[in-house]
Length: 360
Image 1 (tube, helix red, strand yellow):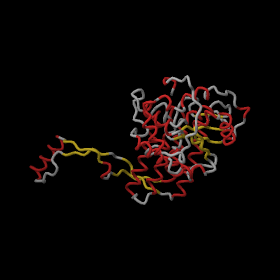
Image 2: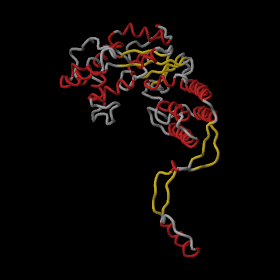
Image 3: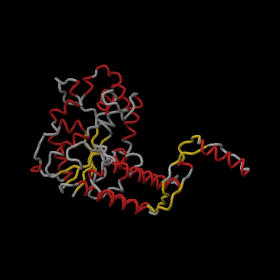
Image 4: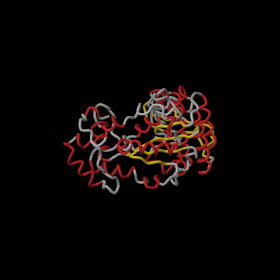
């Protein structure tokens, strides 16, 4: 069984690749065709960040215990709650997910008792009961009153100790990821597809975690189109979320390039395929052949061609600058700050009858 992880740089078009892969009878997804992201691995407190927090030269035994507990809390939260498009592991994978998660954390850490340190304190409030007890102790036993009525709010968690070196962590993480993919592959297909199990930006830093059966497809996008999608769609009241990148042009450009700071190194990795969204749309036959070869897909298994990804529809999502003439100055600035040597601005085929409401 192969695991294909499809990822991108936020709104860069990875869903198009996912839609294409879902047209094969030899592929499956954790939640059928429903949107789902494996966020437990790539977000803050997730598996990949756990590694950095444990093995940083700036860590100590207290901070490592916090890192381990934060990861365990995240796993439990995503196991117990039905979030729908992420987590929901109790519903989707059942007790076996709990087992492989516990096996992993127990292989890298031990726990002992309950401990509280300064970092566990999160608030203070006045307790009348404590104040009265302090007054009683003062008048009866002559105890000195200190911090009258003050009561602390604090987390109470077990203390966890790291017991594994970096190499052991990496190997056990691979075992965990392999077991996770097998659980996700309920239909026992040749390929299980994961949407955002990894973030493209962090891929180079976690290359040692990925099992040999894992392959990653990165989908990238023209920075002008990405800026316009971010500003006009992601940044609109329609979605109600903060956009994935800042909207000030200079800040956007800096973030665009910083997120891709290791891109050339990632392209050289044998288990990584880098494609551009606009090329997938314009050179459909050529690019899907590259994807098929990379994933080991057979043409005869492509049972539903263009059912979920149709380039004739997705062409509405490229060359967006023709839809927003009011952004002319910002677009010029982007092309100046992000030169064609960083991302090629080749001419795209324009959908001349496109309307803004067709953009998605």
